[in-house]
Image (cartoon, rainbow, N blue to C red):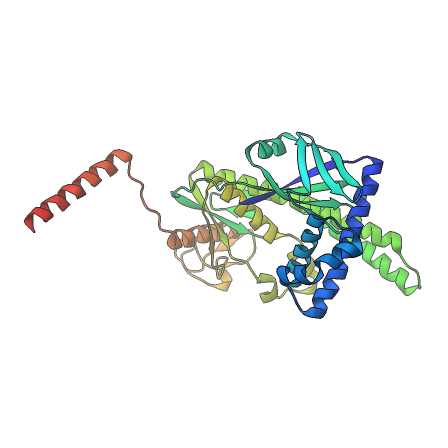
Length: 391
């Protein structure tokens, strides 16, 4: 599998000028080439290279390999939707391959610019150093943030973990009040997460009302829009950090017991479900797809199987008798079965149902010790030998 490592660059003032000029010219070349490709309705890289390679180099004075990267980028972007002509911002991410960049030392990378090679220093923490020592970096992207911070997003090829036969499955129920509840009774949420999420939602609503009021007065609320962008970035970082912590805890708990991971297949749930207007912001205020992605790639690194089950009636079905009724799920903290009288937490009951469905879809096979496997192989060879003699 491929992992992306984010390295913070520390360029000098001269290097910043060279990098900005290179990025701006590269994206301008991508915009021109995208217009030509849209007019020709062509998204094939070899065809674009045959038609526009020499003109692209002469018009924007790009090096040969940088022009090739421009052709590949425009071809890949145009292939997504041929009805829209793609556009690229002047500060959009710029791809670098092994011919355009080279790691000269443990903390220095050589990047090709329009004025030559630039040796840029970057920060390397122990996590990144471990990945760099074990795996060779491949393609990367040069990124600049709004505050002028430069990053290099490096892609490394990491082998998957050795898969193992699970002895059981850890069912995980995702929710709004409790972000994740496992079948072993552990909840991953709390008052701190909910309070922080509510604080960001309240701040965003206040800024949106202020921006709307300024527009009604004929003003251009630039400062309010900047505050909205800062709030959105902070909230995104908070969600990402929380999802990383929860996914790491879930995978660690499953690996410690030799279990696989069972999740609900919630793809398209927001288009299928309807919520009242006061509930919409809360129901769509968390990145569950991101949490599932983090769980899947962390499990793939250690070889743990991940099974997606049908989420239908997991919250209304009793995990003891299997009775399904809407009245069983009264609220999030209380699940009383109307048939057998079983009472428990509703999220915990759903996690047990997810675990049971994963056990059905993935048969749990007992693993024999190596000595028994050798004995069985010897008995099979003896039976085959006797049957051959009888024939």
